[in-house]
Length: 194
Image 1 (cartoon, rainbow, N blue to C red):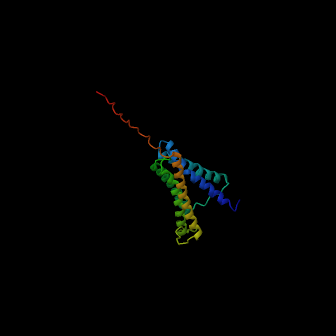
Image 2 (spheres, rainbow, N blue to C red):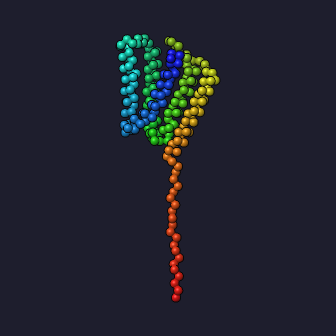
Image 3 (cartoon, helix red, strand yellow):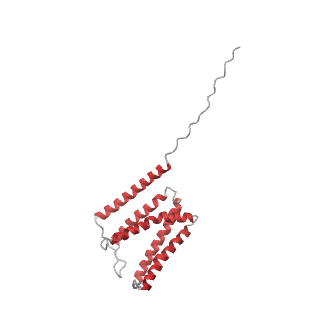
């Protein structure tokens, strides 16, 4: 499993982030639409997983304490800020879209998770930090296969959105034709003979 272990973790991250948007939107809705209540719950989960778990591993000796280098602490902290801001933006986007029943809600996750790898690729093509040198910039463009993969991901996301929209239309059913209105036709008055 060591050769392909990274694929396992990639799949687990995709599962986690792929379910994040629907769960945070529904959780926020159950909290009477309180965005900051939902964000607080995310923060509690971060504390449990990203604070207490590493501290437990360091204190128990199962993991060694990292060297507390200012550059490492700064950029790791900035990564945490980026993650928390992303969570906040997802919550605000879900609320602004109208929640899980809104049409626009379907676009939130595919747009976020389609945009993120493109930004990641562009940043990684320009920024090449080395230990002690965080501001090392030069252009290293990836091969055509990575760009083709990004294009295929974009096409796939678009197809998913279109098929999801079709499924929702079918689920709601075709619009019913209005009932025919019957107007009474007056009968001619009987003729009277004198």
